[in-house]
Image (tube, rainbow, N blue to C red; front, side, top):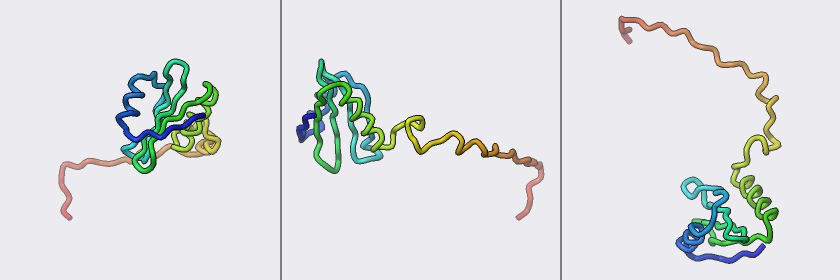
Length: 113
């Protein structure tokens, strides 16, 4: 893996537009960084936008390293699905009862408070 610091979001945008985007992880509206995982020809890249630290471009050696970095970033950002999350178990919710419906009556006459 190679990494280079990028000073401008515009530079990252230009690279992103030229690339085939695989996936985006994170959101600058709710977090401090966003990573765009993409590919240009045979180069696998991560473009990291940050509002608190330096922006960077990472180039991965191969697709396996690229996919491992994508999975790690999803885990760090909390975007891994519940199927991938070992802390989630279906049996945790098996005993929960459904909410009971409330019987409410509607009267034509207003009550005085």
